[in-house]
Length: 184
Length: 396
Image 1 (cartoon, rainbow over the protein chains, first blue to last red):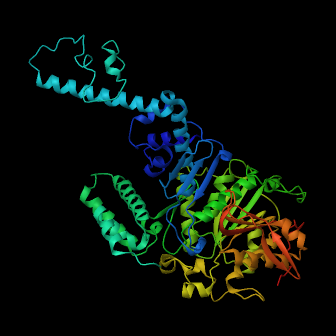
Image 2 (cartoon, rainbow over the protein chains, first blue to last red; image 1 turned 60 degrees about the vertical axis):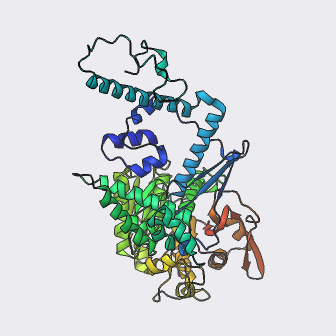
Image 3 (cartoon, rainbow over the protein chains, first blue to last red; image 1 turned 90 degrees about the vertical axis):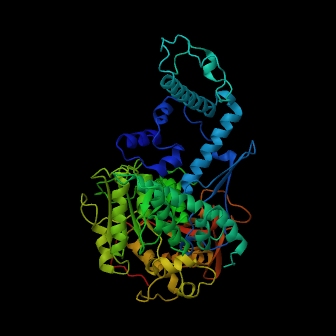
């Protein structure tokens, strides 16, 4: 079972485990984006080990039984591009190694795929959701405030004509006009 | 231990008073920040587990402060939080049982890879050897025993790493301490429930923890017949692993800049220093006594792979000398059948780390290959197959 599927299973059965989820999925635990992410493009694969230079903080102490360290920071350098990623996210060295590789893969994805990268697509979906939620709440409060006005089947969403609502993101889908109903 | 400057305390406290509390234990600010973050995560995670009302922010903060105070006194973080991640597992930790180290995790993961033939040096994947007795009902089975198992981390880590590639797999974890055995059993149960480990597929797979003293001949004899009830007769073990007590009495008593303050004060000496009651072996330093004994036990069990964690390079060299003596190997056999691993066995060596380890053998000096990067951390030995497990053979 993939790690994503396993976490999804746990969310359904109510045994969702935050630290492990955070370590391997880098998500907030109780979000509906778990569903949305199933439809996202798959996470980019980390580059092969021979392209990487992994290092660790060289301690001066003895190690092994004689010392009980609590953190295992991992540093990963991608030799071809020179990108360096560090991770101390979790208390597990093996988890941090995975996280560092995934973060590096995401950075390379952004670098090479730009708008088509998974991060850009996920970011776009999140922006749409946030803007849609904001739009709904504005509509609700406007309705509450202006309850005496005719509620009229609003053919035209007054928001659509306004490109920015304090939302400075480029490519805001709301500028596409009322015909775009996917956000309602 | 260098003094922490008052200016660092001041700096820490401007960010959060908790950092000032943690600093004596963590020694530097970045570590304190990390540990505060983990303590907070833990408090919030365990608070939302409480059915009914969400705990108030003030109550949570109070709990954070309490945990920071414990940690600041030097209590290992793993005892404060009660857990330590290990590979894909999450292990419960409790006072009285040694906390799993990252170095141990590293060799366990690498050994699993070697047994699967997934590491660059693939030779261990040829286990089990075809030279088995003909009445063997489990061709292709792998039997592993982990001595001084503690939290069970090594046994659990190996089982987790091998269970999907080895349909025939029997793993046993042994400790003299019932506290450890109980904790190890709890860790098995918890990780099964959490789905970090799949249940062994009986009867070809099995997993169990048991209490035994490695110095007790009767108990070690009993190991041959335990666990795998489906086969007739005595069964040995293919792989013997251990992270036994290996700290010297001198280092334990005097520190010598070699022993962590919190280890000495809060972790069990039973797991770290061979006790006063253990038998002594001629020509064997007190801190090496478990290795001498476990080499004998491994011989009786017919092990083909033996891996021990060791304290340092000097101890690795002494263990290899013990091996050479017991096995009566020729010099070239020592080099061929032994390896020394550094802390991070799958990382490439840096500045001189690849230099072989010199082991004095009689009049000659051997060179045992060294793998990985970091400090010398473990010793791998590949003894001959013995056609029959024979407990009557006495060594030393």
